[in-house]
Length: 285
Image (cartoon, rainbow, N blue to C red; front, side, top):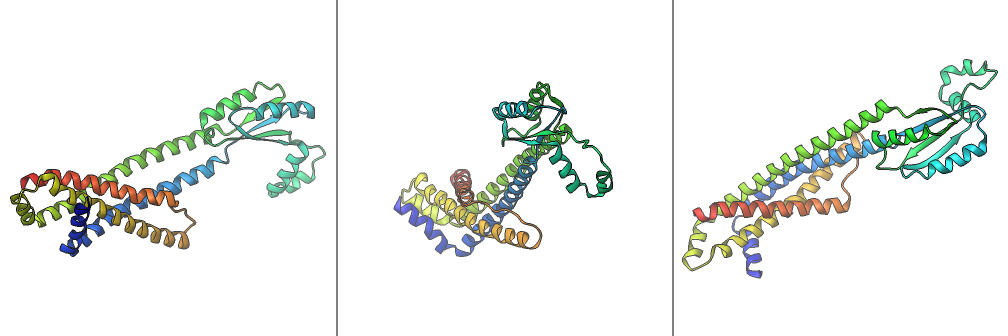
């Protein structure tokens, strides 16, 4: 193993220009993958923030006793999908309307009686903010006799679900496409290394080296170049993130664990691509 590692590292000294080109090419391939990953990450966070606004409002019949509402709030809070239940009195509803609908201040000032009903505002837990779960909770709320009307914007919730599905499908397809492109690029660079060391490989065979012994340094070389390319790609992605986040809009970057996983993925891609390339081209030399 020590000899294999030494041979893999010696390839950087034997062909520094080719090695630098390989690492740079891998880095730019993974850089594109990383950029798409950042777009997917920020899109997912944006959709999560939008989903946090999903809530169900149950408008109560006038004259509903407070003790009945209190018992009902406890029952609703026990629903597995429910995160929080808030009771909004008639006076609080009117005060909120006066604060938020400033263009109707003249109408509010002429009121002799509060026309707004009390309500229960129900927020759902993460993972239950989709059309299926929201609709199920709304149906259960209709079973309370004092609930005159249930509103949750069903069309809006369904559109949010479709947007999440489309984003997930596009992310999967484009991610696979960029990953395949990275594998092809890494494999091509390793093939160039194999061809450049054609004479050396022939000599090794003449002195009795097995194909497995010859393959191992190339495979390890690919893994090392994949790791270096991943590190460089993360640096480029961070530079792009800083430029966009500072100049255009606030964005999120990979967590340390995600960055390590990205470099590890580059290492694995380098290993697999080099193994495939060596297995394909070494027997022909």
